[in-house]
Image (cartoon, rainbow, N blue to C red; front, side, top):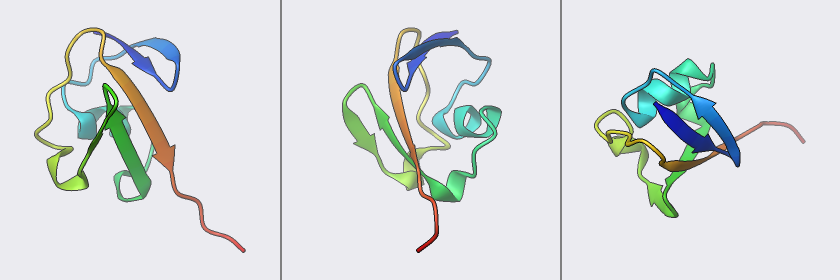
Length: 65
């Protein structure tokens, strides 16, 4: 399936937001997700199904000081 992820077109095999985060090698506990201009609560990542052409924005939280 083809998606826009952070502005780049990507071909992915993931079917849910959680699977996409994992496919991209990110820690699901440290990622905020926006799908088609709407923030998706972390509690819905595993059940939110992706559709061809979705626009996904991922923000990864980084610790430090």
